[in-house]
Length: 415
Image (cartoon, rainbow, N blue to C red; front, side):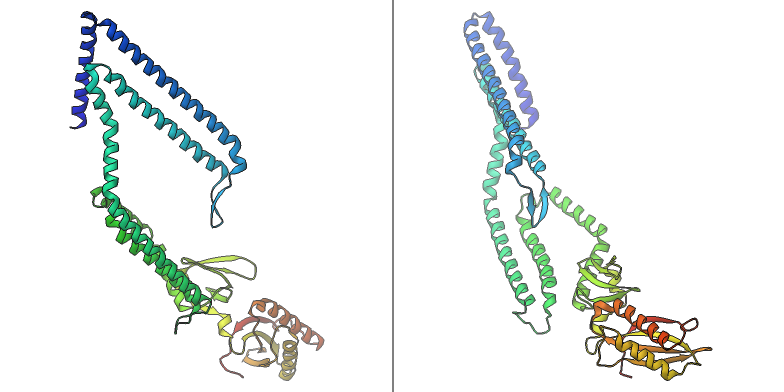
């Protein structure tokens, strides 16, 4: 029986109830009718009193919640991330109180109306009809829950297996990262990126297995929502997916690690963060520069830490000097300045090269070795100072065209 039939039947019962009242009065049954009417009035008054009492109690309870929860509650945090503040938690609790208050009131009304109608023979069947509006949905829900129990057990088993599989992957990742478990050809810094990849795949695999057991998974509405979400995800996340894939490639290429000094697109800095989507550098001016992983993957990267692992990184400064100054004197001044510079290595020794003959001057290049990559800027500054002091003490001017400029390079062979 659909809703229209039920509404029509309820209307007919109300009309019969009107005729019953007329018959009761005209046929001399007014005393019995008055007694029932008094019972109805008592029931309605009692329910009205109960509703008022429920609302009054919830009002008092809400006032106590506002007054006392500030001292007892703490902000809801998950892994140091604040999810809800104390005031937001109070709002949630008060919302559930209001919802419970309305549900109790609705339940009282649904109970009262059938009871009132059941007192009169003409409306007795209408009472059962109105009560069925409330009981049938509950019955259907309970039957649906009972029928869904086997699928629910299957989902729980799948989730438990996935949970312990994830724990096993995390355990192996920790062991590899700490060096306790060594796999040939597998670097320890690959442990957590690989774990994150496997974790995402495990989640996707779990969702794919659980999906058929979800209630309503075969309905067209459920399938339509799934298709819509897939289309939105594919259209709106192309660049994000590209950066994610580039991040995976960079991870397994191992061009740098956290703390390395690298150069990307004429920007030199120290690697602060490697995320699935971006790489962040901090330069010598304490500025934070963010590169998308696609940019990193498509750029030439110079890693000064790995470049000078054997003998150290070579820093060089170019000096131009007129031909009237003997080249041997220039060599001595530059080598003495290099030896005096802190944070440089004694072995291999500093060396000087003549790189070109210009129209009015010769170009010299002093080279020093260092393994203290984090002090490159300071080393350049100290080396420049020592060069200036050396030429000044020797009575040689560094005016134009006698200028110098610094750069960084890695020697391919010893001079």
